[in-house]
Length: 197
Image 1 (cartoon, helix red, strand yellow):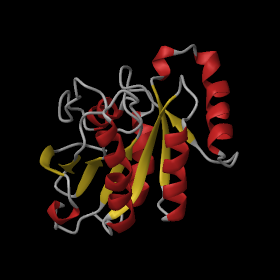
Image 2 (image 1 turned 135 degrees about the vertical axis):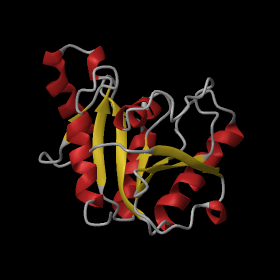
Image 3 (image 1 turned 90 degrees about the horizontal axis):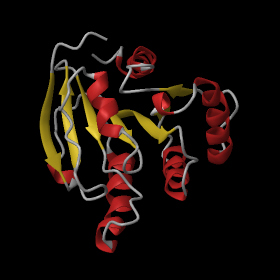
């Protein structure tokens, strides 16, 4: 994918504020500190398009970015940060599920997992939501540069087992630091937007 433009559109906390352009959207989900912002920045070849929060779990907004003036990337709030205030944690579910359940522009979700850790209960809940609403998921395991190459396959299998994924389900490996997996992830994303641009 050749990136000709990548611009921030707006931040929203309510569905009534979402963009009304009726162009395809690819959303990104994952727990706090999973490397979501770095992954998106790496995909669009921008260093700071998506800002990282200095306080994990604090940002509770949905951010929209227009890519190539043709489709949107949607950065959903990171979930599962245990030290976040209770009132913040209680907003994660309704905000994320509200977007997933009602957004007709949504074509697929990039479900981001840290390859070093097994999926949490929150990750399992996210998979249940995606299954329930029949939203296609692209699984991406980040931070692969932080483990030994021989450990990658083992970790992928453990993640599949924990999430209850079918053996044939692909989990793409990704490193924002080395750009490993960038082209493979774009290829999967293109499969959902190529006929809609």
